[in-house]
Amino acid sequence: MKVAIMQPTYLPWLGYFDMMARVDVFVLLDNVQFEKASWQQRNRIKTSQGELMLTIPVRKGPVERLIAETEINLDTRFGATHAKSLQTAYGKAPFGHDYLPQLTGLVKSGTPLLGAFNESLIRWIADALGITTQIVRGTDLGATGRRTELTVAQCLELGATHYLAAGGSLEYTSREPGFAAHGITVEYHTYPHPEYPQLHGTFVPYLSAVDAVLNVGGGEARRLLTT
Image: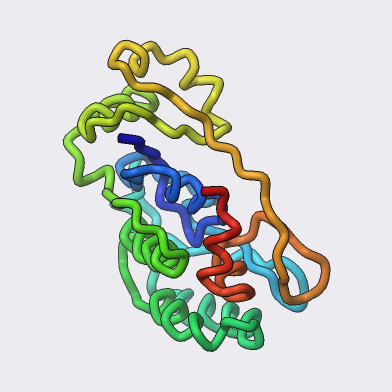
């Protein structure tokens, strides 16, 4: 049983879904602190004018609120703005007709909580890519703790024998004795970003995965993953 645990970010990049496709269970870590101006609330798409950062406005709240508890400021009507930006950027993309209506509909859905909103889009992209990995929320698990302690506890609750960690976590996961003590093998994820046909000039990597889905289609975008 292989598990990966990642925060529910906004319209994640292809590497996020490559990680998801490699495991049996993927945990959306929505029970950790919200970080302002992080990937939790923003991501990039490509337009005819270059890269565009789409940012979800959130309401003011306690400093230590969880991602799952963070409220989106729906008064800004950001959903309509983001949907228009996606339509303008990808309306002429080869697969825009196939995917944009559903995608923009979700973006305009008015879901009030950041964690749930991001989850709906993550699940939509995973489905477009044909990924069948089981997705669970951290808030639906009983595991508690902070940082790596929480990760180990969630792995144990799910019966993990292997944990696929983000490459950037090597420094602290390698020092955590809890994995080895419980017989959990830690592996580190790498994903060399591929190139694919893309609108608007020179190829730009590390955009939201929707860029690949809209440009080459879900099936071909799935083949861009390393699994």
